[in-house]
Length: 178
Image (cartoon, rainbow, N blue to C red):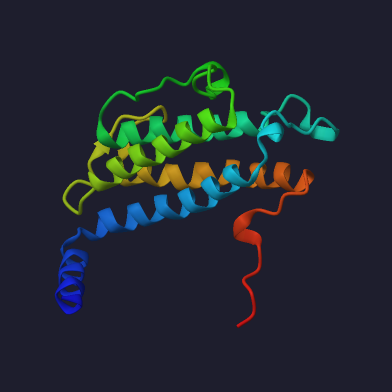
């Protein structure tokens, strides 16, 4: 039975379109890093934003997460050729009614599910097709790549906020020695 299951998994792996697989992998990496950090930040720190130096007026940690999720939704919608389930909201931070850590985490988690839906729509046959974007037409694959590079910009900012609050990002914790 195990051998049959392994064989079926192998067939499924080889049957997947390589473009779909590649972009889903990018989303999985972002999802792992961002979601683990968002979960690690205590609920009472979601309103934290640095105020010293050049940090005046920046997004709070919770707003960073909401912004990131909103842009994932909007970019995935471009890839799918549909309207985003959520508009940009004030300052591109998405729905302002999401206040608690739990609400924001659900929004983030749901944005990743939507991003996977978009990545599953990419194939070797359509990834070069132009799609309209804010920046003008671009290949679907370029829009899809935007999910990773934009997310890591905000992930970096979230890491700074977490470390300023004594939180080590889960993906920065060294693995135990073997």
